[in-house]
Length: 313
Image 1 (cartoon, one colour):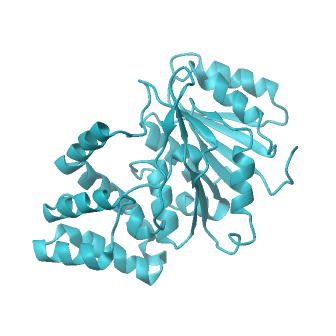
Image 2: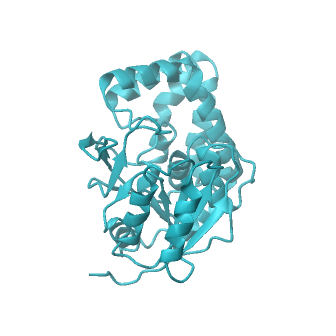
């Protein structure tokens, strides 16, 4: 049964050589119970049949529901940012979409219901994200993404994202912020920067503990789930070696663009975060007074140690 129409949704999909799995993802979009959607595909230079499969899907859809664009050719983050940056993609809501997942048929319905609910609609900026069900290349369930329990706040967003971009749905006002940013702005990841910007503006951040997508884990994944102890250790070693510090500098470039619009308390936290590049005592004091945290207490402790060694900013 189709739900009541709460507005248009533009599905923003980034593609690159995704012919192996994209047909299943496209079919799961077609099967959505929420029907008022349009699919905007930005292809980043595929050399396989990805574009052909998208065009075939477009022919099966009515009312110009599918648009295929040429991506910037600078990787997945720049590809998604190019879609966020366009002011001619105009709708009430937007959903990020990967090329190799499978959506539950009520994925959009659930997200829009929560974004448009009476309790959330008062906030100008709104972002929905959820857990994911992890599957292998043969669609066997291999687990779930972590279940986060702490508050989703700017103090958390500066240290980590809270949900995969493939689960995120957000409103027009939030996307409008990205339309004002420089077209050549570099970002680390579209999901992380979406959480950072929304929380920086004191927007509503919704986290659904129930997964509504099958997140495929395979060798071609650009970004994986990073589950398991060994993958976490390996990842931490990379972060400590300087990866996180470089990411922070890139994220701060976006925050500099919106700093004057941020609420005073978040602007202060941003200044404290930047101060984590100062002397040891200043770093320790600002980390503590800023209250920066990861969703895991152990990871928060690990990041405190990184801060001691000036590895955060």
